[in-house]
Amino acid sequence: MKTKLFFIITFLSFSLLSAQSVGDTFVIEGLTYKITELGTSNTVEVSNDGTVSGSVTIPSTVVDGVTYDVTAIGKSAFQANVNITEVILPSSVTHIKESAFHGCTILASANLENLVQIDKRGFRECQVLVPTDTNLANLTTTGPSAFDRCNGFKSLNLPVLTSVSDYSFVKCTNMTYVTLSPSLTDIPLGMFDENTSLESITIPSKVTTIGKWAFRNAGFKTVTSLNPTPPTVDANAFLSSGYTTIPLLVPSGAETAYGSAAVWEDFASLDVLSVSNVKQNLNFNVYPNPVNDVIFIKGEDVDNANISVYDFRGKMLLSSNITEISPEVNISTLATGVYFLKIKTQTGEFTKKIVKK
Image (tube, rainbow, N blue to C red; front, side):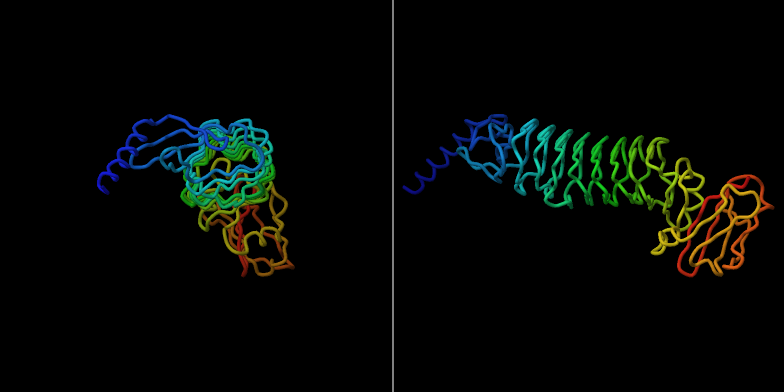
């Protein structure tokens, strides 16, 4: 009898599965689900938002004859829904598909920390969205304009984001700080275009290319590049970001390479990375620049500082110590051109580009 009952249950379960197909849909509590996989794993994605509003909780599983894992929010599922204010995603949802939340203009809160992939325009124009956790610890892939105009973002940590499409974070105008993955190799076209509040950026050591408008109109105070070899930078990567008036921090020994590399050479100064770099740079004033014969160095820690002058090949041409009483260096013997002035004290060092007239 038990064997017969087991057979009947198995047969009914098989019949239910065979009656359903990938792509079929069903509705539970106002949300439409589409079957994405059947068999070893039974999975669905949310495919339509119906009439939901306010706070929306997506379940980790749903039952329609059999139990399905909810793993994604489907293409355009909530697009242009101007009534939802919060989305609570289960850990099982790791994929946001194209335009899933595009234009949800009053969506103010969503937990994004379990997401692995966000496709094209996934959260575009979610203008007041604030992630419940700014550490997007699992996000590896973003499509074009994934977070376009997410003005609620203030800071983000992107520790594993390595596959980034153009304009992924364009016009996030209130973001002041972002941490990039140490494994990132390419900063594409317009990645942080029009992030007007972005105060600083540290470019990871594996980045080799930076695309057009990557940081256009940023509000930079400092930029740090960790690659000893200057990345190839589009001429307009830092357009209108004020980069010619701010310091660039680079690894020790890379000053000459950056100082003669396109775009990098246009930063106001080249500082060697160390604990005291920024303080040293802020406390020193090098003038006049451009200079005819004598350049003066003033600062809080200038007494007995060592001053070295290098050409663009890295060859040291002059070296001397200065004091508070006599804080000048005579470069009248040098030919007209661009040089690098390295100032080294007991507490730190930085390099300043100078122009000899």
